[in-house]
Image (tube, rainbow, N blue to C red):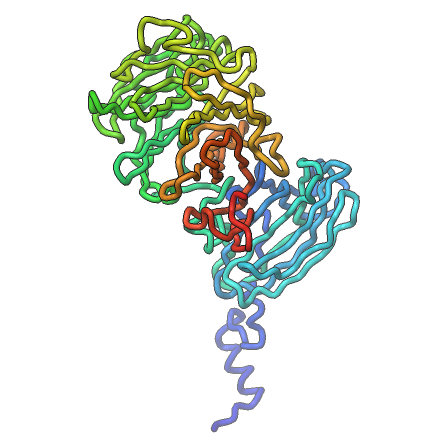
Length: 506
């Protein structure tokens, strides 16, 4: 082996200029990336959005830091680590905006392995530092759990949190890779093109083995700038983009950019072999309040606008849904009387108009008169009809109401709030839009809710949760699941979606 003297080595290196690095100086290639510089909007949270800010921001003025990411507990930020990721350092603290009684636990995970956890922290506790070696991990999750029973308003800070790495920088992802086939309530939900699904206030219809999901496209804001978007799926988790099937431009001008087209639902009529889309159309500060109808020969359209009407009693028509019974009878359910009362109206055989003559108690009925409800979702199991609705509090969530009946036309009996656990009084920060049977699991159903983000409606999230009903019972419980899988329904998994000794939903 030839030996190289140090003087010869230095001369050899100098001829390459100052860009040449010796092996022992390779650490100079290491780069740093702050958590606040990443795309943190894909974080999974109970409510609100992760926010990046600096020490100049008044929201955390009592803390000294350069950059921070604030997540409102409960929250998860999952980050993909490429080869060459080395360390993660930072500090954690409750933000000064947290409620005085707030308490939360910070933790960092690699899959099911907890790498680090803080003690239970309160608002005035000093920041706690952490340092982790990440060289053997491909993915980590930064997690914040609110202490059970404490106030929801619990913003938590990841202060001066940064990665050191060589090569590709770490990347925030929508959800952990091991949840790729799971429903993840509150996460960004993307279609097969990678775009966030735009089907807000929507509904589902199954045709053969394919599900069709229609909803409001809010990608350009509150008003009807785009139209009704549709997606198709065979497993309810992975969705194909069918495009805008009822463009805003196909509606009368007052229901376009200065109006709204809300809560579209589609049903199939076996007699006419046509698909009917009913929706709420409105304009002029919600003074029009009519039911819109569009028709198509195929479930994925395109749909042709037909008319806008007030179905019965010349009453206002706002948040709505459609229910088709086993005998083929179809019903519109909607907020009427300026949202004071829910109406249920039977449609004629074509599904294209209300059944006539208009007779209260025979062709239409009132549900919870003067109860101030909206966002109705009706379904049937066995001989009992169920209806979930929210109260009227604008974009702010409230406690859900459950009603049951022996007939779609009632009488309907109030059964309380079916949601149980922390944040149940806010329906887990959602508003109902639809309930469907869980395919392949008799007695199981899926609650579909919208988690509205009024500051960025296009980034509103979807919360789908499973629940089971004992046949003949007028009561059931909907519990929070951070993630869940259709294959686990009725099996030994807990409320966090992991296998345990107790069955999900009980």
